[in-house]
Length: 165
Image (tube, rainbow, N blue to C red; front, side, top):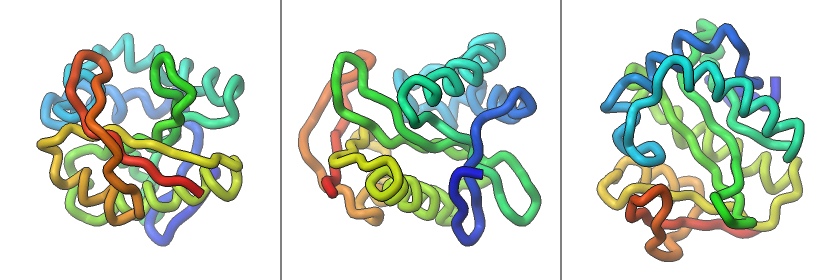
């Protein structure tokens, strides 16, 4: 276990996470505001689990599985990655639709942000959000991130938020 909050904990992604992660990646509503906004195939989902674990070996951080304490349910993923062609480190999170609206995103993203500063020694963390994704903007503001600028990644116009230690 990487870190634990009142209701959730993070651990590395595992092969056993394939079914729930593939379900999330195939759900257009879940993926609407993730990356390019497109769904991801099961084969690419399976490959992504291995890639995230390799990423952690290389960089010391990754995207990790969000697990609910009460029933060990896979609720989503959260973590860090470098932005493409940049030295900026992005925090990202995604929850499966049944877990929306429970405060889980703020709870886990706030804990991961603190983990990045305190345990990983990061000095600056950014987040990208679609301008129309009001719930996610509220999460970023709630965890203390501030709007910085408009940015474009993956061919999508996004907003960049940031926080420095």
